[in-house]
Length: 285
Image (cartoon, rainbow, N blue to C red; front, side):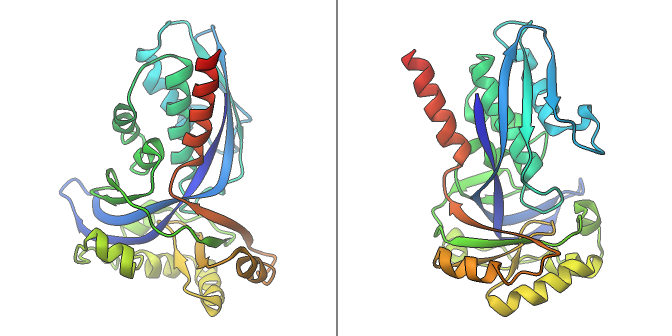
C-alpha cells in the first residue's frame, strides 16, 4: 500500500487559555495542502516494524511512524504480522506544517487496514492524540475548526485557494514558543462563522519572529506580496492566491536561500482519497 501523507496549514491560530496541566487551549482551522510525503507499507510475518531510510538525528524508536505502529500492535489480526515502511520525505521538519503528525496518522490508517485491526477513524484519532495534538485531524481527514488542544474537530469547508508556502532555513522549536512569557494566551474565543468569514491571526507569530530572525526577514519580505501568515508554531509562512499563475509569479521572486512551493488547499485529505481507492480495489479482489 502506498499513500500520500499531506501537510496542513493553520489558517489562523488563537490561543484562548492555558490549562492546569500546562497545555494551551486554542482555536484554529486546519486545512490540508497537496504537498505530501509518500509512505509505502509492506506486510511482513516477522512481527517487526522497520522504517527506511533512517532520518538523521532521529532515533528509530522516537519516530512517530514507529510509535503509531506500536500503538496498533494489540489490535492486529495475527500476532506475527509486522510491516516494512518506506518513507519518501518531502515535507520540511520544524516548519509547522505537521509532517510528523501526518506520517503518524497515515501509518495508523494504513496499518489498520493491512493488519485488519477493524478500528474506526474515531478510535484511531483517540490513539493519535496520544502521539500529538495534530494527529487526529489527519486521521479524520477533513478540514476542521479545532478547539481544545486541537483534538475537538468540526468539519468546515473553507475556500481552497492556491498557496505560496515559504520555508526559511531554520527549525522552530514548539516548546520554546509555548513557554515564552510574552506569548498571548487570552485571545477571546470566536465562532466558526466568524472564523470562516473574517479569518483570524496567529498568536505565535510575534514570538516566532523574535526567536528566529530568518522567519522575521522572510515574513517582512512575503508581506510585500500579500496577506502573509505563519502556520502553526513552525517556520513556514504562506499567502493565499486566487489562481496558480499569481502564486507561481511570486514564487519566482523568492530568494534562493529559502524553500518555496505552490500548492493547492484541500478540504479532504489526499491520504483518505488514496486509501479509499485502495480499499475499493482490495474488496473487488
